[in-house]
Image 1: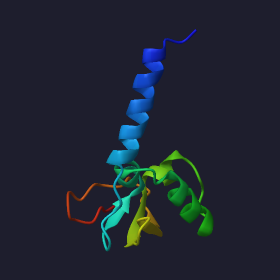
Image 2: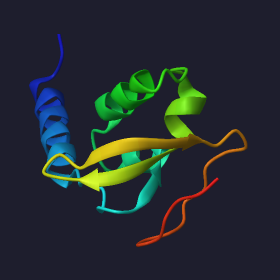
Image 3: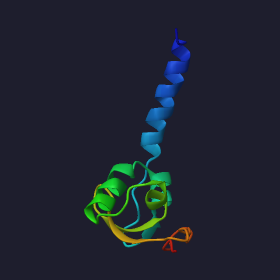
Image 4: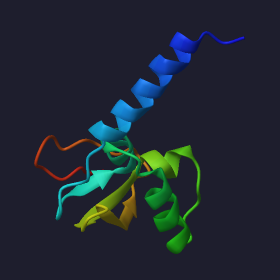
Length: 97
């Protein structure tokens, strides 16, 4: 049997992670890894990789650059795959290969 206080803490942590989720900044380019750290971008990343017929594996999820088109959902668009890894450009700057 699972302790109810452990379940309560897990529920609070899950709710807090949704509250802390953030959309991408319109006009900037992001590595997939950076988008995942901002919020629940995995469904959008998978959709975009499918749309452009890109492989769907860990390397492509984390090391693809996406353009933030914005909107209420922080829509993204595929830019390119970084075969040597994707780099964080820092706050307010584009990520890059």
